[in-house]
Image 1 (tube, rainbow, N blue to C red):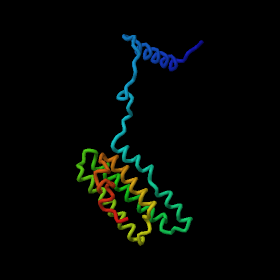
Image 2: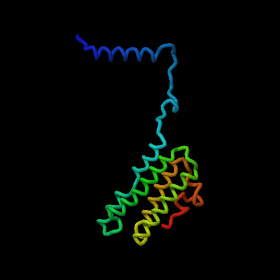
Image 3: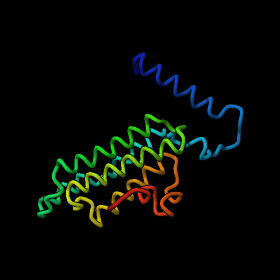
Image 4: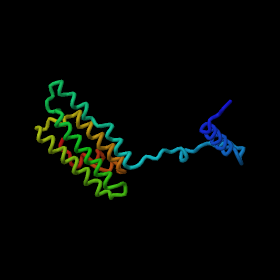
Length: 162
């Protein structure tokens, strides 16, 4: 049987690794959660919140006659959240609570203005619940506790008018 040099090299590496795993110990090793933990960065946590954006679903409501959910209006709402997340990332995990809270205030007051421009019809009951849940997720990803704000109702409750 002929083995190519690449396959032989791979085989040698595997044999060495396997033999090193068992050398010097007869005990079975149980991996701890610390050894298996996956490192998720501050930026990753914040960017993962984007996967829960409701704006694509909102756009579909135009088909049901809800004209306030135009692509333009939904994109404006999405941009507010994109700006919040990018601002938090730029400020960094070590930013002060005050710095982070100011970014949330800017986002919520921007949502207030957007909703006002559409005669208060963009953020109705269902949308309010979705946005508050999203803001709470971002708050947690930013290292803050939503229960510490708005009398326990979340950071959006400090400024929201919807």
